[in-house]
Amino acid sequence: TAGATSSPMRWSSARSRGAGGSNRSRVPSESSRTAEVGTGSIVAHRTPEPSGRGHSLPCVPAPPLASFWSAHRDVITAIATVVLAFAVAQLVDRAVARRGAAVATRVGGPLSPVASTRLRLVRRLVYVAILVIGLALALAQFAAVKRLATGVLASSAVLGIVVGFAARQTFANAVAGVLLAVTQPIRIGDLVTFEDTTGTVEDIRLTYTYIVTDTGSRFVVPNERLAQSSVENHTLAGDRVRVEISVWLAPDADAVHALAVLGREEGVDVEVAEIDKDGVRLTARTWARNAGERAALEAGLRASCLERLKAIQKD
Image (tube, rainbow, N blue to C red):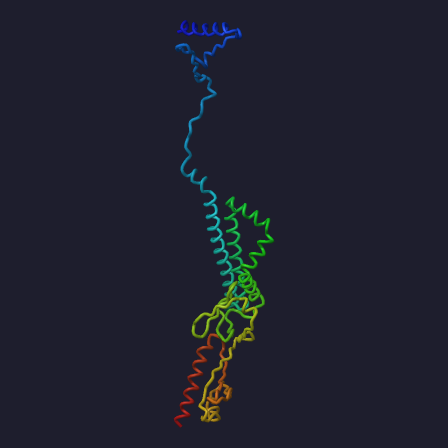
């Protein structure tokens, strides 16, 4: 009650004056402190003020979707950017391919080897450019990558030297692929001979060229080697392809009579190519209308020469 509380406080004031201290007494505020009488001691407790300024708003938890987005926003944005880049690259590639098909239909036939080769180069360059831009934008979502890129740009000269030495072969093949597509010493569909391998050019890519041999196997050649080496192109001057086979005769065989018999076939030129201790080699040559007929015509010419020679032996 009020009487019990005021009596100790007055005692505290008198004590303070008796000790020779100041006459000012410390009386706690009624709103913040209350005094309790103990055995020879006074303990003060702080109580909360009734003011409304100390009240805190209730904590409302964030929705699960919002918290997941805030925690994985960079990863989700990067994945979406890469997927979008692939989709855009596919759409652009198909649009360019449809454009080429429309041009071929308007012309009334397939595209020329020159146009087909350059069209494929444009498609691949655009495709790679879109993917590179998409990957760069995806990596830019991460702060660590941005800091790394800043450091890389600061030391771009040293990085350029390191990357140049590490990827010299790849860059050389890519540059050679662009030069082959622009200058076109070989084209898609051409019959070529490279390092004793003869076949039809199936595809010219940025780094490698694919050649299909007569047996159906594919000969993959780096573009840098094609650009630095000699390549025999059998169809560069025209669609016709030279077909040549070799026929060996025994040393004691009548080569003159064999020449006369084999030369009777229309459109076939036969001549003595080599005379050796092991025999005489004759060559028979003719022309195929295009590279696609070369293998079949070569096999037929070889069989025809064999039949004629067997007929000579029977006689």
